[in-house]
Image 1: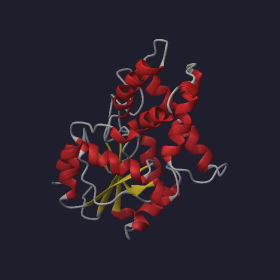
Image 2: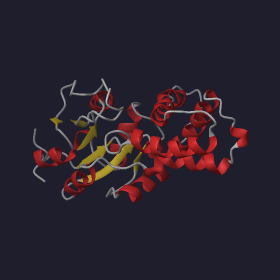
Image 3: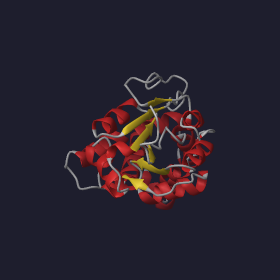
Length: 240
């Protein structure tokens, strides 16, 4: 596969470019120490919070509720997790809960992310195609030095992946045909949805996204256009 037809690379972010589990657990550990009477595992807390991610978005995708940005969904999910742990949120300052919700804005990039993005940016448009909202993506970019050309994704498309509109509207915003856009992700399901919409696809595994016991997305499971070990390897395959 040659890259001459691809003019833009768009990226899944949570897990593919940044370590959401480690970042959320780091901030959750401090919060739980300050506001919880019991002993709680911060990584299990991060997993429980993330487990509500897809169900919350599915209510939007199904039309059960209007499009609602991810920061709001995360905040609602956070309150549910705290409640299930028996933590009385009425005794916690709202500002402290709001600050923990912003942990998703301060996630650290994987070691190869910034170099890989910078290489790809030298020849191509690069932008997130994330379910994260615009402000979340801006803050994360500033925190981690992600050199985006534009901030795209769910809030711009008014649709959550893997809805076709998320991919199709992103290409349209860039004034490109779907085949001129490549979706990069560490999740086979994301790439399968993008491929159905005509986008090119690139897979790279993130075997520690869900911790050392991860069993999913350890290898390419589709006929993707590129398969790389990490983002720098992808850039090298593309000659940049």
